[in-house]
Image 1 (cartoon, helix red, strand yellow):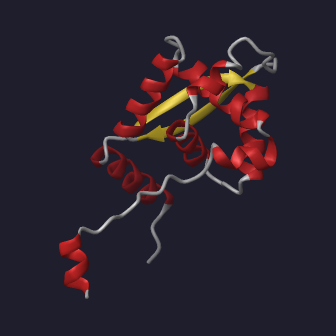
Image 2 (cartoon, rainbow, N blue to C red):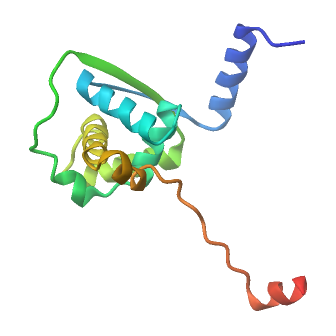
Image 3 (spheres, rainbow, N blue to C red):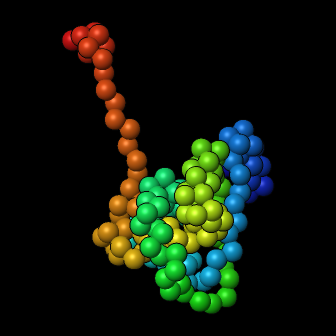
Length: 145
């Protein structure tokens, strides 16, 4: 039997508690939200949380700092809401500190601006999925043979 919406929500909330996920809400200008939507469309990502997590993990603070004083879109504020686990939250705080003590919201805006400025093809670098390299020791390699 299929779960009801309430049961699914309760199950998701329980999973967030066990994984220590934190909900973040960033009030950004609507132009920034539109840029994030463009990035997601260009890179075929459907989840806002996934795209923001990839931007945080692949953050290049030196490049992002070049947009600190640049033109940012104006407009009424929009809300970007997503969940992060402790490791990604730590990385976001590191990025914010390396951006001269910027707030989390400002760091997110700069990362979106930077990736969007790279265009449809260049933004793939900012939204790539980090891969771990697996290396086998000699003993393990011999055991497989």
